[in-house]
Image (cartoon, rainbow, N blue to C red; front, side):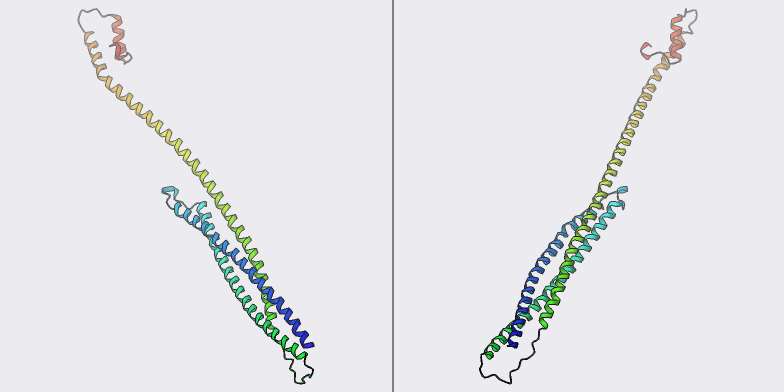
Length: 268
């Protein structure tokens, strides 16, 4: 009877461990899916970061500089790649843990079959009226139950690690994303300010150029009037030298003005 009781007790223990292993495998598969989704979600941000770095290499002249935006983009690339490596390593650990638990589950199932068979045999023997003195109680090997408990604890630790890892990596990526965004905003504002200043300077240069053009036009206009002015002055000077000719004082005044270049050309 003690033998039958022991077998039934350990069979119940193995049943419980077996169900725990089944449940743990299902839970680990869920955690595996979470890590796979997190790993997959890193691909697009990484591609965006690489595209930004590539596009910014197309800047020309003084704009092609190693600025704060580029530093933050390189940091973002490093953070994302580091997260992906860490998630991939964690995924491998989960796969290995699932393999170990499935192995334990296999041996638990085998032990359960053995215990079920032993229980049937001992139940049959218990019904015998002529007890056998050579009945061998045997020694049951319950190492699979111990392995199941060990792998269950390992699985619990791994799941806690995965929870912490997913939270930390998401926080790191979000923080770096915000830092890159701030750097972009600052750089855009600086570029807009520089553009406005350059536009103002360009307008000033254009205004100066227009003024110089007007001055040149005035110089040409004055130069064009010099020859007619000299002709008029020569005529007046020559006529004033005529002998015994009365000189009108108004004409003399006009001549003096023309001589000093003060009379309008229309009056000549």
